[in-house]
Image (cartoon, rainbow, N blue to C red; front, side, top):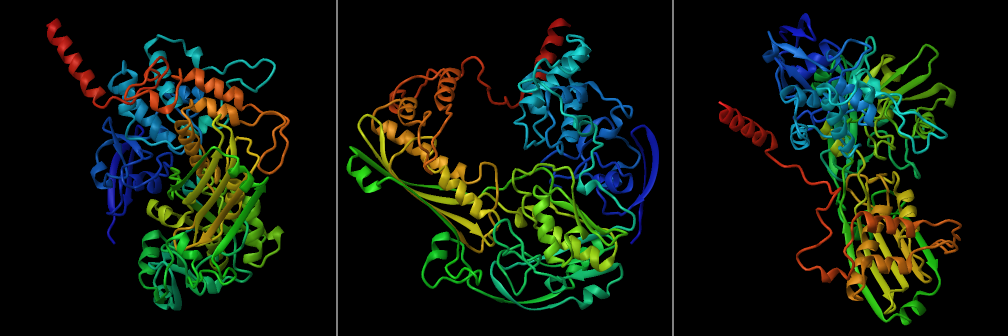
Length: 628
Protein backbone atom coordinates (compact mmCIF):
# COMPACT_ATOMS: atom_id res chain seq x y z
CA UNK A 1 0.00 0.00 0.00
CA UNK A 2 1.34 3.43 -0.94
CA UNK A 3 2.32 5.83 1.80
CA UNK A 4 1.32 9.42 2.32
CA UNK A 5 3.95 12.05 3.18
CA UNK A 6 2.82 14.69 5.68
CA UNK A 7 4.82 17.87 6.15
CA UNK A 8 3.61 20.12 8.93
CA UNK A 9 4.71 22.23 11.86
CA UNK A 10 4.04 20.35 15.09
CA UNK A 11 4.63 22.07 18.41
CA UNK A 12 6.88 24.60 16.72
CA UNK A 13 9.01 22.02 14.92
CA UNK A 14 8.98 21.18 11.20
CA UNK A 15 8.23 17.49 10.66
CA UNK A 16 8.02 15.29 7.59
CA UNK A 17 6.72 11.75 8.03
CA UNK A 18 5.13 9.07 5.92
CA UNK A 19 1.91 7.56 7.12
CA UNK A 20 -0.83 5.29 5.83
CA UNK A 21 -3.32 7.04 3.53
CA UNK A 22 -6.19 6.03 5.80
CA UNK A 23 -4.57 7.56 8.91
CA UNK A 24 -6.40 10.11 10.95
CA UNK A 25 -4.56 13.07 12.44
CA UNK A 26 -4.84 11.21 15.76
CA UNK A 27 -2.99 8.20 14.30
CA UNK A 28 -0.33 10.44 12.76
CA UNK A 29 0.34 12.14 16.09
CA UNK A 30 0.30 9.01 18.23
CA UNK A 31 1.86 6.40 15.95
CA UNK A 32 4.15 8.39 13.65
CA UNK A 33 5.22 11.19 16.02
CA UNK A 34 4.77 9.34 19.34
CA UNK A 35 2.83 12.28 20.80
CA UNK A 36 0.68 10.06 23.01
CA UNK A 37 -0.64 12.87 25.21
CA UNK A 38 -3.43 13.04 22.63
CA UNK A 39 -5.76 10.16 23.59
CA UNK A 40 -8.38 8.08 21.82
CA UNK A 41 -11.43 7.62 23.98
CA UNK A 42 -14.20 7.06 21.45
CA UNK A 43 -12.92 7.47 17.90
CA UNK A 44 -16.16 9.23 17.02
CA UNK A 45 -15.62 12.84 18.05
CA UNK A 46 -17.78 12.55 21.14
CA UNK A 47 -15.41 12.54 24.13
CA UNK A 48 -12.82 15.21 23.32
CA UNK A 49 -9.79 13.27 24.60
CA UNK A 50 -8.10 13.74 21.21
CA UNK A 51 -8.42 17.55 21.10
CA UNK A 52 -5.55 19.49 19.47
CA UNK A 53 -5.07 22.86 17.79
CA UNK A 54 -4.79 23.01 14.00
CA UNK A 55 -3.89 26.48 12.74
CA UNK A 56 -5.03 27.82 16.09
CA UNK A 57 -8.46 26.19 16.07
CA UNK A 58 -9.50 23.43 18.44
CA UNK A 59 -10.27 20.22 16.53
CA UNK A 60 -10.94 16.59 17.41
CA UNK A 61 -8.10 14.75 15.76
CA UNK A 62 -9.98 11.44 15.53
CA UNK A 63 -12.29 13.03 12.95
CA UNK A 64 -9.64 14.74 10.81
CA UNK A 65 -7.85 12.80 8.04
CA UNK A 66 -4.09 13.10 8.38
CA UNK A 67 -3.90 14.28 4.78
CA UNK A 68 -5.82 17.46 5.68
CA UNK A 69 -3.16 18.35 8.24
CA UNK A 70 -0.46 18.75 5.58
CA UNK A 71 1.00 22.26 5.65
CA UNK A 72 -0.74 23.23 8.87
CA UNK A 73 0.50 24.29 12.30
CA UNK A 74 -0.45 21.70 14.89
CA UNK A 75 -0.25 22.14 18.65
CA UNK A 76 -0.74 19.23 21.06
CA UNK A 77 -0.77 19.03 24.83
CA UNK A 78 2.99 18.42 24.76
CA UNK A 79 3.54 21.77 23.02
CA UNK A 80 1.66 24.05 25.41
CA UNK A 81 4.64 24.59 27.70
CA UNK A 82 8.40 24.08 27.78
CA UNK A 83 9.20 20.56 29.06
CA UNK A 84 9.28 20.60 32.84
CA UNK A 85 7.02 23.64 33.08
CA UNK A 86 3.24 24.06 33.13
CA UNK A 87 0.93 26.72 31.70
CA UNK A 88 -1.42 28.64 34.02
CA UNK A 89 -4.28 26.37 32.90
CA UNK A 90 -2.25 23.24 33.69
CA UNK A 91 -1.15 24.66 37.04
CA UNK A 92 -4.75 25.49 37.90
CA UNK A 93 -5.83 21.93 37.06
CA UNK A 94 -3.06 20.72 39.39
CA UNK A 95 -4.11 23.09 42.17
CA UNK A 96 -7.84 22.37 42.19
CA UNK A 97 -7.58 18.60 41.89
CA UNK A 98 -9.23 18.67 38.47
CA UNK A 99 -7.29 15.61 37.29
CA UNK A 100 -8.31 12.28 38.75
CA UNK A 101 -7.79 9.28 36.47
CA UNK A 102 -6.26 11.82 34.08
CA UNK A 103 -7.24 10.21 30.79
CA UNK A 104 -9.56 13.03 29.70
CA UNK A 105 -7.34 15.77 31.11
CA UNK A 106 -5.05 16.49 28.09
CA UNK A 107 -8.13 17.06 25.92
CA UNK A 108 -9.83 19.00 28.70
CA UNK A 109 -6.75 21.24 29.12
CA UNK A 110 -6.74 21.88 25.37
CA UNK A 111 -10.44 22.85 25.44
CA UNK A 112 -9.90 25.09 28.47
CA UNK A 113 -6.89 26.71 26.79
CA UNK A 114 -8.99 27.30 23.68
CA UNK A 115 -11.77 28.87 25.77
CA UNK A 116 -9.41 31.41 27.35
CA UNK A 117 -7.59 32.12 24.08
CA UNK A 118 -10.89 32.80 22.34
CA UNK A 119 -12.23 34.91 25.20
CA UNK A 120 -9.91 35.77 28.11
CA UNK A 121 -12.92 37.15 30.01
CA UNK A 122 -15.13 34.09 29.51
CA UNK A 123 -17.74 33.74 32.26
CA UNK A 124 -18.66 30.43 33.85
CA UNK A 125 -21.56 29.79 31.48
CA UNK A 126 -19.36 30.31 28.44
CA UNK A 127 -16.63 28.12 29.98
CA UNK A 128 -19.15 25.33 30.51
CA UNK A 129 -20.36 25.56 26.94
CA UNK A 130 -16.86 25.68 25.43
CA UNK A 131 -15.91 22.58 27.41
CA UNK A 132 -19.16 20.89 26.42
CA UNK A 133 -17.46 18.76 23.77
CA UNK A 134 -15.24 17.07 26.36
CA UNK A 135 -16.34 14.28 28.67
CA UNK A 136 -14.96 13.49 32.13
CA UNK A 137 -16.17 10.44 34.07
CA UNK A 138 -14.35 11.11 37.37
CA UNK A 139 -14.62 14.68 38.61
CA UNK A 140 -18.20 15.78 38.22
CA UNK A 141 -16.72 18.80 36.36
CA UNK A 142 -16.85 21.21 39.32
CA UNK A 143 -13.08 21.12 39.93
CA UNK A 144 -12.47 21.52 36.21
CA UNK A 145 -14.63 24.65 36.05
CA UNK A 146 -12.89 25.99 39.18
CA UNK A 147 -9.52 25.43 37.50
CA UNK A 148 -10.48 27.34 34.35
CA UNK A 149 -11.84 30.25 36.40
CA UNK A 150 -8.66 30.30 38.51
CA UNK A 151 -6.45 30.29 35.39
CA UNK A 152 -8.54 33.09 33.89
CA UNK A 153 -8.10 35.20 37.04
CA UNK A 154 -4.33 34.65 37.24
CA UNK A 155 -3.80 35.36 33.53
CA UNK A 156 -5.83 38.59 33.88
CA UNK A 157 -3.86 39.66 36.95
CA UNK A 158 -6.91 39.50 39.20
CA UNK A 159 -5.28 36.76 41.28
CA UNK A 160 -1.58 36.31 42.12
CA UNK A 161 0.41 33.38 40.76
CA UNK A 162 0.89 32.26 44.34
CA UNK A 163 -2.68 30.98 44.14
CA UNK A 164 -1.27 27.97 42.28
CA UNK A 165 0.96 27.02 45.20
CA UNK A 166 0.09 24.16 47.50
CA UNK A 167 -1.80 25.00 50.68
CA UNK A 168 0.07 24.56 53.93
CA UNK A 169 -0.67 21.52 56.07
CA UNK A 170 -0.82 21.96 59.83
CA UNK A 171 -1.44 19.08 62.23
CA UNK A 172 -3.01 16.59 59.81
CA UNK A 173 -3.28 15.88 56.10
CA UNK A 174 -6.88 14.77 56.73
CA UNK A 175 -9.17 17.58 55.63
CA UNK A 176 -6.31 19.52 54.04
CA UNK A 177 -6.16 20.45 50.35
CA UNK A 178 -3.20 18.33 49.25
CA UNK A 179 -2.29 18.27 45.57
CA UNK A 180 -1.99 14.96 43.74
CA UNK A 181 1.59 13.81 43.19
CA UNK A 182 0.79 12.50 39.70
CA UNK A 183 -1.11 15.57 38.51
CA UNK A 184 1.79 17.24 36.61
CA UNK A 185 2.25 14.15 34.42
CA UNK A 186 -1.49 14.06 33.72
CA UNK A 187 -2.05 17.74 32.92
CA UNK A 188 1.00 17.76 30.63
CA UNK A 189 0.12 14.53 28.78
CA UNK A 190 3.36 12.84 29.83
CA UNK A 191 1.76 9.97 31.75
CA UNK A 192 1.75 6.76 29.70
CA UNK A 193 -1.36 4.61 29.77
CA UNK A 194 -1.29 1.05 28.39
CA UNK A 195 -2.27 2.12 24.87
CA UNK A 196 0.51 4.75 24.89
CA UNK A 197 3.31 2.29 25.62
CA UNK A 198 5.55 1.08 22.81
CA UNK A 199 8.07 -1.76 22.78
CA UNK A 200 10.54 -2.79 20.06
CA UNK A 201 9.26 -5.42 17.63
CA UNK A 202 5.76 -5.23 19.13
CA UNK A 203 2.82 -7.05 17.53
CA UNK A 204 -0.79 -5.92 17.51
CA UNK A 205 -3.59 -8.24 18.64
CA UNK A 206 -7.13 -8.22 17.25
CA UNK A 207 -10.01 -10.39 18.48
CA UNK A 208 -12.64 -12.36 16.58
CA UNK A 209 -15.91 -12.12 18.51
CA UNK A 210 -19.06 -14.20 18.42
CA UNK A 211 -22.05 -12.92 16.46
CA UNK A 212 -24.29 -15.33 18.42
CA UNK A 213 -25.60 -15.09 21.98
CA UNK A 214 -25.62 -18.85 22.54
CA UNK A 215 -24.12 -21.37 20.14
CA UNK A 216 -22.04 -24.51 20.07
CA UNK A 217 -18.70 -24.18 18.24
CA UNK A 218 -18.45 -27.05 15.78
CA UNK A 219 -15.12 -26.09 14.19
CA UNK A 220 -12.59 -23.27 13.90
CA UNK A 221 -10.34 -23.14 10.81
CA UNK A 222 -7.48 -20.68 11.22
CA UNK A 223 -5.23 -21.98 8.40
CA UNK A 224 -5.83 -19.12 5.95
CA UNK A 225 -5.24 -16.50 8.61
CA UNK A 226 -2.04 -18.18 9.78
CA UNK A 227 -0.70 -18.30 6.20
CA UNK A 228 -1.06 -14.54 5.67
CA UNK A 229 2.05 -12.37 5.42
CA UNK A 230 2.53 -10.34 8.57
CA UNK A 231 0.59 -12.71 10.81
CA UNK A 232 2.71 -13.95 13.71
CA UNK A 233 0.16 -16.28 15.32
CA UNK A 234 -3.50 -17.15 15.76
CA UNK A 235 -4.72 -18.30 19.16
CA UNK A 236 -7.87 -20.11 20.28
CA UNK A 237 -8.91 -21.95 23.44
CA UNK A 238 -6.88 -24.93 22.14
CA UNK A 239 -3.68 -22.97 22.93
CA UNK A 240 -4.38 -22.80 26.67
CA UNK A 241 -1.87 -25.14 28.40
CA UNK A 242 -3.40 -25.12 31.90
CA UNK A 243 -6.77 -24.90 33.66
CA UNK A 244 -8.79 -22.59 31.46
CA UNK A 245 -11.13 -20.59 33.65
CA UNK A 246 -11.16 -17.34 35.59
CA UNK A 247 -13.53 -15.19 37.60
CA UNK A 248 -13.72 -13.29 40.88
CA UNK A 249 -15.66 -15.99 42.75
CA UNK A 250 -16.21 -18.88 40.34
CA UNK A 251 -13.74 -19.64 37.54
CA UNK A 252 -16.39 -20.13 34.85
CA UNK A 253 -14.99 -17.87 32.11
CA UNK A 254 -12.50 -19.25 29.57
CA UNK A 255 -9.81 -17.08 27.99
CA UNK A 256 -11.67 -17.56 24.69
CA UNK A 257 -14.86 -19.48 24.01
CA UNK A 258 -14.33 -23.16 24.71
CA UNK A 259 -16.91 -25.48 23.18
CA UNK A 260 -19.62 -22.83 22.95
CA UNK A 261 -20.22 -19.09 23.06
CA UNK A 262 -22.44 -17.58 25.74
CA UNK A 263 -22.94 -13.96 24.67
CA UNK A 264 -22.62 -11.75 21.60
CA UNK A 265 -19.09 -10.38 21.56
CA UNK A 266 -17.40 -13.23 23.40
CA UNK A 267 -13.84 -13.78 22.17
CA UNK A 268 -13.50 -16.85 19.91
CA UNK A 269 -10.00 -16.38 18.43
CA UNK A 270 -7.33 -13.72 18.21
CA UNK A 271 -4.63 -12.77 15.70
CA UNK A 272 -1.26 -11.21 16.50
CA UNK A 273 0.23 -9.46 13.47
CA UNK A 274 2.70 -6.77 12.48
CA UNK A 275 -0.02 -4.14 12.64
CA UNK A 276 -3.69 -3.97 13.51
CA UNK A 277 -4.79 -3.69 9.86
CA UNK A 278 -3.19 -7.02 8.95
CA UNK A 279 -4.62 -8.52 12.12
CA UNK A 280 -8.13 -7.38 11.24
CA UNK A 281 -7.80 -8.67 7.69
CA UNK A 282 -6.69 -12.02 9.11
CA UNK A 283 -9.76 -12.21 11.34
CA UNK A 284 -11.89 -12.26 8.20
CA UNK A 285 -10.04 -15.39 7.05
CA UNK A 286 -10.93 -17.41 10.17
CA UNK A 287 -13.83 -19.77 9.54
CA UNK A 288 -16.01 -20.68 12.50
CA UNK A 289 -18.92 -23.10 12.20
CA UNK A 290 -21.63 -22.63 14.83
CA UNK A 291 -24.73 -24.52 15.87
CA UNK A 292 -27.05 -21.96 17.41
CA UNK A 293 -28.68 -22.78 20.72
CA UNK A 294 -31.76 -21.31 22.42
CA UNK A 295 -30.83 -18.13 24.25
CA UNK A 296 -31.89 -16.74 27.60
CA UNK A 297 -32.28 -12.98 27.83
CA UNK A 298 -34.60 -12.55 30.81
CA UNK A 299 -33.52 -13.58 34.33
CA UNK A 300 -36.97 -14.96 35.15
CA UNK A 301 -36.84 -17.18 32.06
CA UNK A 302 -33.46 -18.45 33.25
CA UNK A 303 -35.07 -19.85 36.42
CA UNK A 304 -38.03 -21.45 34.63
CA UNK A 305 -38.20 -25.26 34.60
CA UNK A 306 -36.62 -26.68 31.46
CA UNK A 307 -34.72 -23.51 30.64
CA UNK A 308 -31.57 -23.92 28.51
CA UNK A 309 -28.50 -24.52 30.66
CA UNK A 310 -25.75 -21.96 30.16
CA UNK A 311 -23.09 -23.53 32.43
CA UNK A 312 -23.10 -27.25 33.14
CA UNK A 313 -22.06 -26.80 36.77
CA UNK A 314 -25.23 -24.70 37.37
CA UNK A 315 -28.15 -26.68 35.90
CA UNK A 316 -30.67 -24.21 37.31
CA UNK A 317 -28.72 -21.20 35.97
CA UNK A 318 -28.35 -19.82 39.50
CA UNK A 319 -25.08 -17.95 40.10
CA UNK A 320 -25.68 -17.12 43.77
CA UNK A 321 -28.54 -16.82 46.27
CA UNK A 322 -27.97 -14.79 49.46
CA UNK A 323 -30.71 -15.07 52.10
CA UNK A 324 -30.92 -12.84 55.21
CA UNK A 325 -33.46 -13.48 58.00
CA UNK A 326 -34.14 -11.39 61.09
CA UNK A 327 -37.07 -11.66 63.46
CA UNK A 328 -40.52 -12.88 62.35
CA UNK A 329 -41.89 -11.18 59.23
CA UNK A 330 -45.35 -12.77 59.60
CA UNK A 331 -45.66 -11.28 63.07
CA UNK A 332 -44.32 -7.94 61.82
CA UNK A 333 -46.86 -7.68 59.01
CA UNK A 334 -49.66 -8.69 61.38
CA UNK A 335 -48.73 -5.75 63.63
CA UNK A 336 -48.70 -3.25 60.73
CA UNK A 337 -51.41 -0.63 60.21
CA UNK A 338 -50.36 -0.13 56.58
CA UNK A 339 -48.78 -2.53 54.09
CA UNK A 340 -47.18 -1.24 50.88
CA UNK A 341 -46.10 -3.53 48.06
CA UNK A 342 -44.46 -2.64 44.75
CA UNK A 343 -41.88 -3.63 42.13
CA UNK A 344 -38.75 -1.76 41.10
CA UNK A 345 -36.32 -2.28 38.24
CA UNK A 346 -32.88 -0.98 37.33
CA UNK A 347 -31.21 -1.27 33.96
CA UNK A 348 -27.87 -2.48 32.68
CA UNK A 349 -25.35 0.39 32.86
CA UNK A 350 -22.08 0.83 30.96
CA UNK A 351 -19.11 2.12 32.98
CA UNK A 352 -18.02 4.38 30.10
CA UNK A 353 -14.55 4.96 31.49
CA UNK A 354 -12.68 7.22 29.10
CA UNK A 355 -9.81 4.76 28.61
CA UNK A 356 -10.88 1.71 26.58
CA UNK A 357 -9.28 -1.56 27.69
CA UNK A 358 -5.67 -1.97 26.60
CA UNK A 359 -2.60 -3.97 27.54
CA UNK A 360 0.79 -5.38 26.61
CA UNK A 361 2.28 -8.79 27.30
CA UNK A 362 5.78 -10.13 26.74
CA UNK A 363 8.08 -12.92 27.90
CA UNK A 364 11.20 -11.51 29.55
CA UNK A 365 14.74 -12.87 29.48
CA UNK A 366 14.03 -15.10 32.48
CA UNK A 367 10.97 -16.65 30.80
CA UNK A 368 8.62 -14.72 33.05
CA UNK A 369 5.31 -13.84 31.40
CA UNK A 370 4.71 -10.13 32.01
CA UNK A 371 1.32 -8.46 31.53
CA UNK A 372 0.88 -4.68 31.70
CA UNK A 373 -2.73 -3.50 31.91
CA UNK A 374 -5.02 -1.14 33.85
CA UNK A 375 -6.19 -4.01 36.04
CA UNK A 376 -7.98 -3.18 39.29
CA UNK A 377 -7.22 -6.62 40.72
CA UNK A 378 -3.68 -7.53 39.66
CA UNK A 379 -2.85 -9.93 42.51
CA UNK A 380 -5.93 -12.06 41.82
CA UNK A 381 -5.30 -11.89 38.07
CA UNK A 382 -1.72 -13.03 38.53
CA UNK A 383 -2.73 -16.11 40.49
CA UNK A 384 -5.47 -17.04 37.99
CA UNK A 385 -3.21 -16.56 34.97
CA UNK A 386 -0.50 -18.77 36.50
CA UNK A 387 -2.98 -21.67 36.58
CA UNK A 388 -4.28 -20.92 33.09
CA UNK A 389 -0.85 -20.87 31.44
CA UNK A 390 0.51 -23.66 33.70
CA UNK A 391 3.47 -21.69 35.04
CA UNK A 392 4.67 -21.27 38.62
CA UNK A 393 3.55 -18.04 40.23
CA UNK A 394 7.11 -16.67 40.23
CA UNK A 395 7.06 -16.85 36.41
CA UNK A 396 4.00 -14.62 36.08
CA UNK A 397 4.18 -10.89 36.64
CA UNK A 398 1.43 -8.28 36.43
CA UNK A 399 2.19 -4.58 36.20
CA UNK A 400 -0.66 -2.16 36.78
CA UNK A 401 -0.56 0.64 34.24
CA UNK A 402 -2.32 3.93 35.05
CA UNK A 403 -6.06 3.32 35.11
CA UNK A 404 -7.92 5.75 32.87
CA UNK A 405 -11.15 5.27 34.79
CA UNK A 406 -12.32 1.93 36.12
CA UNK A 407 -15.23 2.23 38.57
CA UNK A 408 -15.02 -1.54 39.13
CA UNK A 409 -15.23 -2.31 35.41
CA UNK A 410 -11.54 -3.22 35.14
CA UNK A 411 -11.68 -5.66 38.03
CA UNK A 412 -12.27 -8.61 35.70
CA UNK A 413 -9.51 -10.32 33.67
CA UNK A 414 -11.27 -10.17 30.32
CA UNK A 415 -8.37 -9.93 27.84
CA UNK A 416 -5.08 -10.28 29.72
CA UNK A 417 -5.01 -14.06 29.16
CA UNK A 418 -5.19 -13.63 25.38
CA UNK A 419 -2.24 -11.25 25.49
CA UNK A 420 -0.21 -13.73 27.56
CA UNK A 421 -0.95 -16.63 25.20
CA UNK A 422 0.05 -14.59 22.13
CA UNK A 423 3.28 -13.42 23.78
CA UNK A 424 4.14 -17.00 24.78
CA UNK A 425 3.45 -18.27 21.26
CA UNK A 426 5.47 -15.59 19.46
CA UNK A 427 8.07 -14.59 22.05
CA UNK A 428 7.47 -11.00 21.01
CA UNK A 429 5.69 -8.15 22.83
CA UNK A 430 1.99 -8.05 21.97
CA UNK A 431 -0.39 -5.13 22.45
CA UNK A 432 -4.20 -5.08 22.38
CA UNK A 433 -6.17 -1.84 22.29
CA UNK A 434 -9.96 -2.12 22.42
CA UNK A 435 -12.11 0.12 20.28
CA UNK A 436 -14.96 1.80 22.11
CA UNK A 437 -17.32 -0.62 20.37
CA UNK A 438 -15.36 -3.59 21.72
CA UNK A 439 -15.39 -2.12 25.19
CA UNK A 440 -19.16 -1.77 25.03
CA UNK A 441 -19.76 -5.29 23.77
CA UNK A 442 -17.22 -7.24 25.82
CA UNK A 443 -16.82 -5.57 29.21
CA UNK A 444 -18.98 -6.20 32.28
CA UNK A 445 -21.91 -3.89 33.11
CA UNK A 446 -23.85 -2.95 36.23
CA UNK A 447 -26.28 -5.74 37.14
CA UNK A 448 -29.83 -5.11 35.93
CA UNK A 449 -32.16 -5.91 38.84
CA UNK A 450 -35.79 -6.45 39.71
CA UNK A 451 -36.94 -6.01 43.28
CA UNK A 452 -40.29 -7.03 44.73
CA UNK A 453 -40.73 -5.03 47.92
CA UNK A 454 -43.26 -5.41 50.74
CA UNK A 455 -43.18 -3.06 53.72
CA UNK A 456 -45.37 -2.94 56.81
CA UNK A 457 -45.64 0.25 58.88
CA UNK A 458 -47.41 1.66 61.94
CA UNK A 459 -49.43 4.87 61.65
CA UNK A 460 -46.54 6.65 63.39
CA UNK A 461 -44.18 5.72 60.54
CA UNK A 462 -42.32 2.91 62.28
CA UNK A 463 -41.46 -0.02 59.98
CA UNK A 464 -42.66 -3.34 61.38
CA UNK A 465 -41.54 -5.74 58.65
CA UNK A 466 -39.91 -5.92 55.20
CA UNK A 467 -39.80 -8.58 52.54
CA UNK A 468 -37.16 -7.81 49.91
CA UNK A 469 -36.70 -10.07 46.89
CA UNK A 470 -34.09 -9.12 44.26
CA UNK A 471 -33.48 -10.98 41.01
CA UNK A 472 -30.41 -9.81 39.08
CA UNK A 473 -29.19 -10.58 35.58
CA UNK A 474 -25.63 -11.88 35.95
CA UNK A 475 -25.16 -12.30 32.22
CA UNK A 476 -23.00 -14.98 30.65
CA UNK A 477 -20.38 -15.34 33.42
CA UNK A 478 -20.25 -15.11 37.19
CA UNK A 479 -17.61 -12.38 37.48
CA UNK A 480 -18.47 -10.34 40.62
CA UNK A 481 -22.08 -11.48 40.91
CA UNK A 482 -21.63 -13.27 44.23
CA UNK A 483 -20.09 -10.19 45.86
CA UNK A 484 -22.75 -7.95 44.35
CA UNK A 485 -25.52 -10.15 45.75
CA UNK A 486 -23.89 -10.18 49.19
CA UNK A 487 -23.64 -6.40 49.24
CA UNK A 488 -27.21 -6.06 47.97
CA UNK A 489 -28.47 -8.34 50.74
CA UNK A 490 -26.51 -6.62 53.49
CA UNK A 491 -27.60 -3.15 52.37
CA UNK A 492 -31.03 -4.17 51.11
CA UNK A 493 -33.21 -2.26 53.55
CA UNK A 494 -31.03 0.77 53.94
CA UNK A 495 -29.73 2.44 57.12
CA UNK A 496 -32.97 1.69 58.94
CA UNK A 497 -33.46 -0.58 61.95
CA UNK A 498 -36.10 -3.15 61.11
CA UNK A 499 -36.90 -5.93 63.59
CA UNK A 500 -38.43 -8.31 61.08
CA UNK A 501 -36.75 -8.96 57.73
CA UNK A 502 -36.86 -11.53 54.96
CA UNK A 503 -34.29 -10.75 52.28
CA UNK A 504 -33.39 -12.79 49.21
CA UNK A 505 -30.97 -11.67 46.53
CA UNK A 506 -30.26 -13.90 43.53
CA UNK A 507 -28.15 -13.56 40.41
CA UNK A 508 -28.74 -15.86 37.46
CA UNK A 509 -26.94 -16.69 34.25
CA UNK A 510 -28.35 -15.38 30.96
CA UNK A 511 -26.92 -14.94 27.48
CA UNK A 512 -26.61 -11.20 27.96
CA UNK A 513 -23.36 -9.27 28.33
CA UNK A 514 -21.78 -10.28 31.66
CA UNK A 515 -22.52 -8.19 34.73
CA UNK A 516 -19.78 -7.24 37.16
CA UNK A 517 -18.60 -4.72 39.70
CA UNK A 518 -19.70 -1.09 39.40
CA UNK A 519 -19.48 1.63 42.04
CA UNK A 520 -21.71 0.83 45.08
CA UNK A 521 -22.34 -2.54 43.42
CA UNK A 522 -25.53 -4.12 44.71
CA UNK A 523 -26.11 -1.22 47.08
CA UNK A 524 -27.30 1.17 44.38
CA UNK A 525 -29.96 -1.20 43.06
CA UNK A 526 -31.16 -2.00 46.57
CA UNK A 527 -31.24 1.62 47.76
CA UNK A 528 -33.19 2.76 44.73
CA UNK A 529 -35.96 0.39 45.79
CA UNK A 530 -35.71 1.12 49.54
CA UNK A 531 -35.60 4.90 49.27
CA UNK A 532 -38.45 4.86 46.75
CA UNK A 533 -40.49 2.85 49.26
CA UNK A 534 -39.62 5.31 52.03
CA UNK A 535 -40.90 8.22 49.92
CA UNK A 536 -44.07 6.29 49.04
CA UNK A 537 -44.59 5.48 52.73
CA UNK A 538 -44.15 9.15 53.67
CA UNK A 539 -46.80 10.11 51.13
CA UNK A 540 -49.21 7.37 52.26
CA UNK A 541 -48.80 8.35 55.93
CA UNK A 542 -48.88 12.11 55.24
CA UNK A 543 -45.41 12.50 56.76
CA UNK A 544 -42.34 14.51 55.86
CA UNK A 545 -39.76 12.30 54.09
CA UNK A 546 -37.05 13.40 56.54
CA UNK A 547 -39.30 12.60 59.50
CA UNK A 548 -40.05 9.01 58.48
CA UNK A 549 -36.35 8.39 57.95
CA UNK A 550 -35.47 9.76 61.39
CA UNK A 551 -38.07 7.52 62.99
CA UNK A 552 -36.50 4.40 61.47
CA UNK A 553 -32.82 5.33 61.21
CA UNK A 554 -30.13 3.24 62.86
CA UNK A 555 -28.69 4.82 66.00
CA UNK A 556 -25.86 3.78 68.30
CA UNK A 557 -26.80 0.38 69.74
CA UNK A 558 -29.03 -0.53 66.78
CA UNK A 559 -28.80 -4.00 65.27
CA UNK A 560 -28.17 -4.19 61.53
CA UNK A 561 -29.93 -6.60 59.18
CA UNK A 562 -27.08 -9.05 59.80
CA UNK A 563 -27.31 -8.66 63.62
CA UNK A 564 -24.26 -6.42 64.07
CA UNK A 565 -24.62 -3.99 66.99
CA UNK A 566 -23.55 -0.50 65.94
CA UNK A 567 -21.08 1.29 68.16
CA UNK A 568 -21.16 4.43 66.00
CA UNK A 569 -23.84 5.93 63.79
CA UNK A 570 -24.06 9.24 61.93
CA UNK A 571 -27.24 9.15 59.89
CA UNK A 572 -28.90 11.72 62.16
CA UNK A 573 -26.14 14.23 61.38
CA UNK A 574 -26.22 13.38 57.68
CA UNK A 575 -29.96 13.95 57.48
CA UNK A 576 -29.72 17.23 59.39
CA UNK A 577 -26.91 18.49 57.16
CA UNK A 578 -28.80 17.52 53.99
CA UNK A 579 -31.99 19.12 55.24
CA UNK A 580 -30.24 22.37 56.11
CA UNK A 581 -28.07 22.57 52.99
CA UNK A 582 -31.05 21.93 50.69
CA UNK A 583 -33.23 24.50 52.51
CA UNK A 584 -35.80 21.72 52.71
CA UNK A 585 -39.44 22.76 52.67
CA UNK A 586 -41.05 20.63 55.35
CA UNK A 587 -44.20 18.64 54.79
CA UNK A 588 -45.57 15.50 53.18
CA UNK A 589 -44.62 14.99 49.52
CA UNK A 590 -48.06 16.03 48.30
CA UNK A 591 -48.21 19.47 49.99
CA UNK A 592 -45.91 21.38 47.64
CA UNK A 593 -48.04 21.36 44.54
CA UNK A 594 -46.41 22.42 41.29
CA UNK A 595 -44.11 25.00 42.93
CA UNK A 596 -41.48 24.43 45.59
CA UNK A 597 -39.95 27.07 47.80
CA UNK A 598 -36.65 25.28 48.34
CA UNK A 599 -35.34 25.37 44.78
CA UNK A 600 -32.97 27.75 42.98
CA UNK A 601 -31.67 29.39 46.13
CA UNK A 602 -28.11 30.49 46.98
CA UNK A 603 -25.52 27.80 46.26
CA UNK A 604 -27.73 25.91 43.82
CA UNK A 605 -25.84 24.94 40.69
CA UNK A 606 -27.85 26.01 37.69
CA UNK A 607 -27.80 24.06 34.41
CA UNK A 608 -25.54 25.13 31.60
CA UNK A 609 -27.05 27.94 29.54
CA UNK A 610 -26.90 26.85 25.91
CA UNK A 611 -25.82 29.57 23.53
CA UNK A 612 -23.88 31.50 26.20
CA UNK A 613 -20.93 31.96 23.83
CA UNK A 614 -23.17 33.28 21.02
CA UNK A 615 -25.05 35.53 23.42
CA UNK A 616 -21.75 36.86 24.77
CA UNK A 617 -20.48 37.60 21.23
CA UNK A 618 -23.74 39.36 20.40
CA UNK A 619 -23.53 41.49 23.50
CA UNK A 620 -19.95 42.50 22.65
CA UNK A 621 -21.04 43.50 19.13
CA UNK A 622 -23.90 45.61 20.48
CA UNK A 623 -21.57 47.33 22.93
CA UNK A 624 -19.02 48.15 20.21
CA UNK A 625 -21.78 49.53 17.98
CA UNK A 626 -23.03 51.77 20.77
CA UNK A 627 -19.50 52.99 21.47
CA UNK A 628 -18.99 53.70 17.77
